Image 1 (cartoon, rainbow, N blue to C red):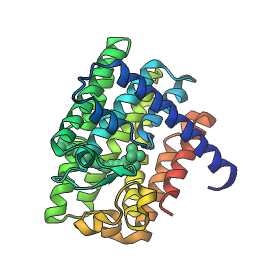
Image 2 (image 1 turned 180 degrees about the vertical axis):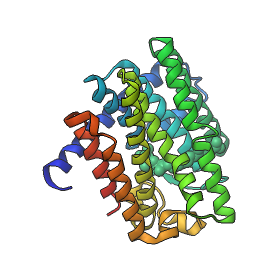
Image 3 (image 1 turned 135 degrees about the horizontal axis):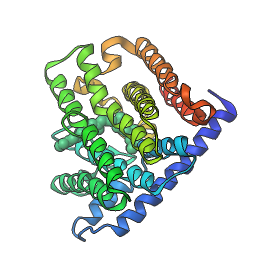
Length: 298
Ligand code: GRG
């Protein structure tokens, strides 16, 4: 993808990211956060992230209902809080041990380890407080809470992270790698698109399609993340490049090399695009996003 289509989606993403920033800023002011932990939580949340999961919530809601609802804004902020907690904990010495994230010192470097652990705990908890207290309609709130808990918890991101750590210690094969990618990254992407769909009043068929699109997109995102770890610069990544190889991580390029990894990413992008058939032209922005995410590794 080149030219006007690429420029337009990049503009749309930037504008949506600023919208997410302002929703998060509003919530950080509104929510009860003790002064002693506020600076750490704020530092973590206000880092210049791409806000891609939150944007998927907003755009999926807009796709099915034609507009953004307050519930979708809250779900967008909540998933970004869970994602940010995972980065803060992932960067800790006991996990990936990184000094840089989002182009700045990691949370435990800017503060200290204990503060970073507590800020991660706070963000994970705050996400569910946001859904429980700011989403109108207890039925919708409970559904969103259930989806996010499942994607983040012991059959989601935490399972993916555990499998990642075990594979780093004892190795693994393609099946292990697929488990890691699905649980560590793709389930949260699928959760984002389904939460957006739910907020927009999607029916069961639309929800299924959005979830499948999101998971495929998440798998592509993690493969390209693996590829960028090899070819990207610290400036481009906002974190230290080359760490996966150094740590002996189980990644796509390590298992099958760059070209075959790219080919799997292309197939998964096609699968993601195939999930959007029922939505017609309204889903063009999500289609272009899938093509753009594939390109970031080429
Ligand atoms: C429970 C102690 C404890 C730790 C959990 C669950 C977890 C730690 C870590 C999650 C695993 C993880 C960090 C997966 C990586 C997913 C990924 C590709 C992150 C980068 O996402 P981007 O590029 O980041 O969207 P920005 O900075 O743009 O938000």
